[in-house]
Image 1: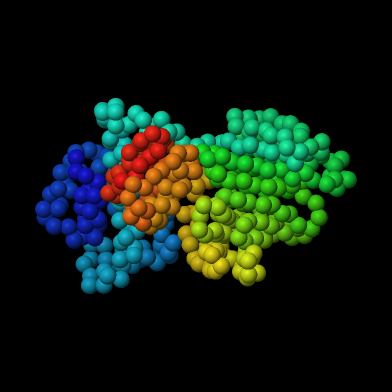
Image 2: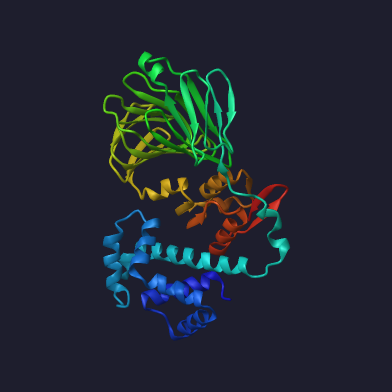
Length: 391
């Protein structure tokens, strides 16, 4: 079987209609090897499939770019240089498709046991968290489903069928406007968790994150504190804005969906708006910006900028994918380290700057994920004394 780089280059040449006779012969040989190969090429030739997949990787207007791409597919033109950006994204899509197929074939065939045994034991993260009350009581939430308990006297905690935590305030305490207790929800490495606050706001917390929040809201604002990363779907209440406090910036909303990433081991932090409207305030210099859907406030050092982004790149983590678009390998590895709770070491520091574009399965064991990275880059991984060495 040809290596992945040869295959994806042949497919790209075919899609651009500038494939040579020799290359076409090699492509036909590859197609003849399997019906799966033929179906993959058919998917990539399908306009709807390719446009949808381009949307997963690109932050530009895919409909407009598709129109440009369609004009030159099968029609050689001297203006192709203006389409380098979109062809780069198409290349990423082809690599992801071929990489997934080649990996399926590899794990589906007989492989030497020693190649996969050690790293395959590192399983992906799952639903786990620790709830810490204001009085210091700790509740391990891992494995709890479809149950409820009371820890404050006023508030009931419901663990739902999907394992998420939902707060509800008793009618009696609601009438008395009782003072809330401040709780902390701590997500370890290798964990994730969803919580529904008493106002109906839904929050998805990523690995190595922490949320501090009141057991119920009182007064004319709703305020929580975040370290790490979380996706918010805020219940609308114009009389009580929802405020997310972080180390570098505060995010103020009435009701909307957005993502906030403020990890302490990251040089920058950012807020990404999916829908609605939010105000982001720099806590150092007091600068404020208002975001519209599809934009992001990026805080690096003392400077805050607003840029247009593909929101899926910053929100798909709460579903089932890691999605990267030309992200440096150091950033990719940080995300994998948090999710799999495993240490990585760069044997060659220059590897940190290597760029990676692709979509990786979040709930696969780490050997599958690393194999897909190896097949689409020249990076190699080796497990040594519970640390994964990057070569």
